[in-house]
Image (cartoon, rainbow, N blue to C red; front, side, top):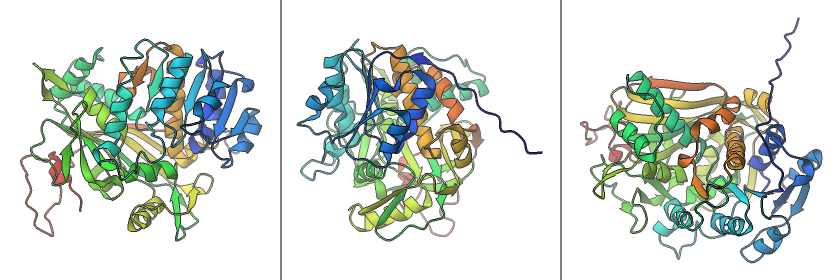
Length: 479
């Protein structure tokens, strides 16, 4: 007799009485809409979708009986368009590309509306305008522009900044991982209540480096064609990020800058950038299932926000800061797409294929790798495979569900905390967000290892390495 599948019981987390406007309706918008109805007490007539184009989303809006407006928001028209749909007590969910996040935050603050996004977006050209310096095309610069709004809107409507999988969810993973380490080390495992407390905990544990270490093994049986970019999540977003400079939070243990590395001459000073795009910048990293592999240092907000958040100062001098950066191996078909795109000097292919339903197997192993402490390395994160993702939520693959869950949790948290002003993931309640996200993340794993980035280096070819400090960034350099 066939076993009956156990249907997961889901509960409403919160009620919302205002209007909700979602900008952009690609893979994440389509994936998160069912979760909003599943976990938030809201009616279809309260929701409006505004998208620059219909990429199959119109069918889903009709299925859920929500309003769909096909309209591209620009610097010139966004206020006029949104004025009709957003007012005091409403919620703007920004899942778009090339609509400036800072402009939308300012609009929502003026209106008295809540806000969330998954990354800090500029207007078109902000990532790739050659008239801007490399430093000014960075996520560091975008974040500084957003941070400038914080004092102006302190105590205003909550605006949750950069809260998807990463940036976003991984900030909560780091806090949970630090507490796990503290418990295993026999230290006080109570969660700190201040930013400085978290910084002291990371320092006292000996954490020098944090990788957001991700390996996507999802596979479509349909081969990639020449002139086509294939990926498991937003292709426009991925190419935009990959065309920005490789960036990383820069730790106090680092001895030398990489040969093409530079500090920014403005802002918090927590990060550096390399004079090359992240799409071609590889780094050694590790996850439990994959083991050692080469990832790419794709720039992300969390690389800078985490390094800044865990910084300790005494007498105005920085005394502790970890090195933090993304180390990403996308699905194998995306790797081929990246290689082709890079060969065309970062000119994106005309054809795109977002793979969801056609995936036949694979998982997205997404977590944080804490290194330099006395136990070597510790990875904590999600090992969600495509089959479980399909059981958990419609219109998702493993990658998109790892984004949609924290979008949902960020919306819920903002509704529960409506007057927090401009907030980054590191400043939010990590336990509440994880409570909402964990049912959608598959197996959650914490695993130690003895890998270092120097393991097996020099086995076939001599390298001049600083073996006294395996966590020094220059030993992670490009092949």
